[in-house]
Amino acid sequence: MSERAPELSIVIPAYNEEKRLPRAMARIGEYFAGRGMAFDDFEILVVDDGSNDNTMRLCEEWRREMPSVRLLSNGKNRGKGYSVRHGMLEARGRIAIFTDADLSSPIEELQKLLAAIEAGNDVAIGSRALDRSLIEVHQSRFREVAGIIFNGFVRLFTGLPLEDTQCGFKAFAREPARRIFEQQRIERFGFDPEILFLARRHALRIAEVPVRWAHDSATKVHVFRDSVLMFTDLVYIRWNWLLGRYPR
Image (cartoon, rainbow, N blue to C red; front, top):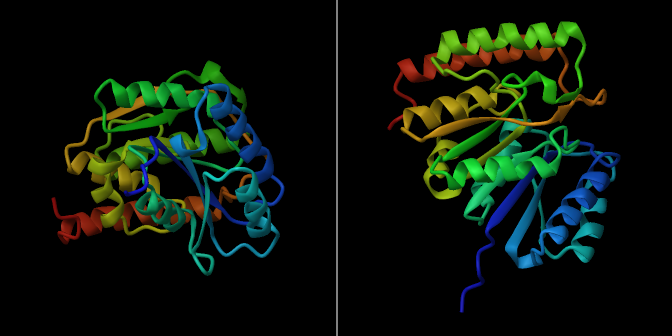
């Protein structure tokens, strides 16, 4: 008899997360335990992106306490986009979610995304922009303005009618969304607009959901360097589309 697939898959991309990951794992475990979910109802896929700290050792320890934890390795540092794609293509749950290791959006907000999926959407994305009163800890004003400007470029290059593509908290009905990650090409921080562009191209229904969010000062996103790289990724998305690299 084949092993029963879990209902939910939680994908966590991790690069040198020995400090933040244990807290995230504990909170996720407590959340599912509080909802009466058994270990075989969900899986947590930690995708190690070539960490050179104790991230992998800590994950092995968590696997002994939570049998639902799966550890995947990229072998070397490839980027957040690559890690998310790796995890989403390995996920077995009916619904697959990816979230950041700092849980900037609390795991309790997951119910909002799941409700949007159950309402008939294929993709549900957390949004900071739809209700900014839910932001518990703001970024610097410079980062917030840079994010607003970047979203304008996202709309210009992709046509996506979304207020916030960069919140690292997204849920997908796994089977219809699999083609997104199979076609995803961007491997670093600029991957979010690409997967949402692909979702829209494949006529998947996208819901943008306001969620609580708190900025973590230990963020891995460098506002200057990564903003430039993410802009070039938008050009790359447009170029791929024009060359027919995103077949329907």
